[in-house]
Structures are given as structure tokens and as C-alpha cells.
Length: 255
Image 1 (cartoon, rainbow, N blue to C red):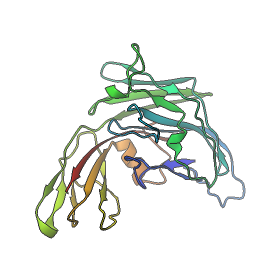
Image 2: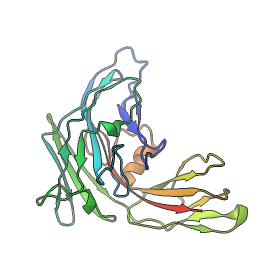
Image 3: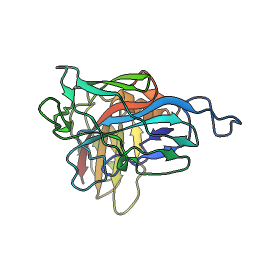
Image 4: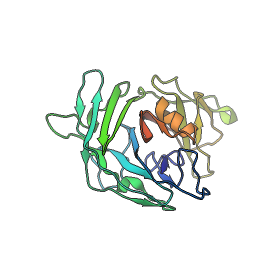
């Protein structure tokens, strides 16, 4: 089971699309389809975003931990250890299991963050940090132990940045500085007059031929950018299993 999230990056920025496919050479046409026991992780640190479609979310971050499974079923999974620390000071972040584990059947298209089975509260307690303490420009280390598998990973949240309009008329464009910690950028334009396809790119300019609307530029860390750019990429930001441990930072502009 592979989750790709660049189709919409929504509600506010992340849309989840499930596809029954492997990161290995197997395909649904193979006469014998093995069941993979490796863990699958989707954890993207996004301090600007509210990833879960719940009422009044308290700035939480969410993660999905599943078993890779098969094109027929990807079962949910529990961790005996789910630890994330800021590398600069070893501060521990208080990730928690929430019991919303979802086993996904082949062909299902679900808003998986309704069922994300791990979450980082805004302020978990005196002995651990919460999502409100995630800082742009800082690195985080992850260690997950789950039923005999160990996943280690690192990511850095890209630094904060701003975007602006340059030029006039049909020559207008959106420009921004190259963001430290980012390998690429996802650009989405919303306008009531015409649909603009979202774009994944490395350039720091984007042509704009609309008169009114909003534009959102999301800087992706190398893990998330690689995972989105190469659909055959089995994992990014983790040293075992499948999935991604990455980060992103956004900036928006109305025009």
C-alpha cells in the first residue's frame, strides 16, 4: 500500500489517495501476490497545517502506521515505541496512539486522516513537547519499533519564507527565495474563473496569468520531494519499511 499526497495537498494542504500497489516489482497482474509484513509509515511534519478533518483541531500532527500488506488489504499496525526528538536538544515529542486504526481494502479511497492512528497533541504535557513546538529550520529524528521491525528516520522542516508578485499584466509571476531545507516546491493556485493545475518544481518562480485568486507555495524537504517526484520510490526519510518521514512549510498570497 502506497500513500501519495500530492494530488491535492488538501483540506488545507494534504489530500490522501490510496492506491493498491507495491514499491517492489510486484503488480496487480502478477499471478501470485505476496503479503508484505513490513510496516508502512506516512508522517509529514507540517506546522502550518491542520491535517485532520475534525472540528476545531488543536494544531495537532498526525501519522499513519500500517502493515504494507497486499493489493487486497493493508492492515493497521501498532508500535511498541514511537519516539521523535529534536536533534538540537534531544527534546522528546509526545506522539500518542489514538485507536483510530483503519485497515484499507483494495480500491478504497478514503480521507485517511479521519483514521490516522498516531497523533502529536498541541501540548501533550510537562515531560514532552507538542506540535506547537515544531520549529521551521530544525531537524527531527524518529525511531519506531513495531512487531520486530525498527524504523529510523530524519527530516528537517524547511525554513519560513514569503512569496511576492513580480511584473505586471500577462508577465506577472510569483517569486520566492530558495528555502533552506527544501528540495522542491508544490504550487497551487485557486481562482474562481479558471482551474490551474498544481505543479511540483524546483524553480523559485511561477508564471501567473490570472487577475484574482490565491496562490500557495509549499516547500518540501528532500524526503517528501523525492517521495512525490518518483512514484516508484518505496521509502524516503526512513531506513526500513515503506513510506515517508518528511516535512513541509507553506506561504500564501492573495492577488
